[in-house]
Length: 613
Image (cartoon, rainbow, N blue to C red):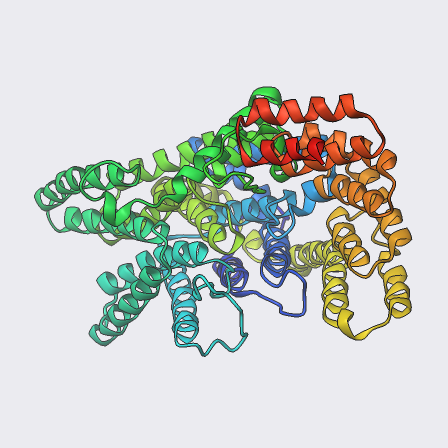
């Protein structure tokens, strides 16, 4: 039997399990022994599961052209174009490490997006209506685990002991906003189980779980999850009513459309629900989005580089921000992030894929009937909720992975009827002998999965080791001597010369303990890898200023003028450097720059005072 073939039901179920476990473990993964205990473990788990899923799905992927309808072939094409665009933009990115592994403490780089795309594609190939129920149960279970963890955190019984002052409900996602987003999605899954579980006792248990889920969601203080749950639950409820009686469904659809208007307006600070729903952080996002548009205008084709938003934000930030001097490494919108960092070559395929999945979901709801329609309604509700929330949120791996899987399910379920006919016709042409896989056919996908698993380990282990070493250095810093630190640092530096994020952390440590020569060596390497690194440039200026060498510091302060033009603090330090060299004319020009940018500001007054002393 050829390798390119339809998966057996047992094989398909195995792939489904790896997809769903991959989603759950990605959400729940954390490792406190790492400097980044949240996002780096999630990328590690996500990549490993995606590698196995891709290997096991190879037969279905190779046979997809024969087993798919026209619309599904178009879906495969859009996925392929997105991966190609992502790959091209990755190779065009100036700092390959960031492009591949993502920004520090974000990890939304090539590996993560490729892994989530693999899960979407595999979900499209292996899921059916019965498998969709497994998706709901797995997402619901993951949400309930986070809910229980959230209850412990709220009660001050967090076993990990995170020290979060502003809101304790970070669960395994590191941020209350992400906790809210995940619980909103899991709430929709639990709601589906409440409606569709055949066992009355289970319905009651799911209902109690839903109450707890929504309670922690509310306590998180973020509106993202509330809006996501509301939209998903509305889609599911209308679909359920439509199945019972089309008239009920039509009334429910009209009612939801009318009531959704004031809710939508309130999120933009308009209307009577503003006090309940509006969050002022939207204003900050407008600053981020303006910067993203600026990046896109100057780098329309390929963007500024995959996950390089942070290193360009200061340059493209608006002059007068809602919070002066605030910086970010993400546009806080999946769409603006991809537009700014990946350019049109990545953004357009992504948007077309989102639109196509949404359209297929709508057409599928119109074509299907009975419980299958309700299943698709639940999955589509989850998908459209995630797609809309992505307008104002970061593509956090622990949350986003479920939306990508949902996209694959929408494609699978919406084309299920047509697909069954195509598969049945193909099976009639197969001989009886072809229905039994040979040993080589059976083991080939597993061998490929093992190979890909090994490749991922090879790529990820050095990054994990670096994060573990820097965590150990930080933990032991108060107890070791400078010489001991120097020896540890030398060993840590070796083999990590291509990781700018790790080097920035090392250089910060060397500055803290006063190992200036080592700091200069490391910082020079940072600037070599990433010439526009803010911290590499900033640390260089600080080191030379601390050594009393303003002439060596000035080139770096001047460079900061271009990559961080609104940083008055850095401009004031530049004035000091010029004055130390007796270059009063250059110092005055910098003072005039501050005064022109921010007339009468405290920074302008502080700069002027330097000339009066």
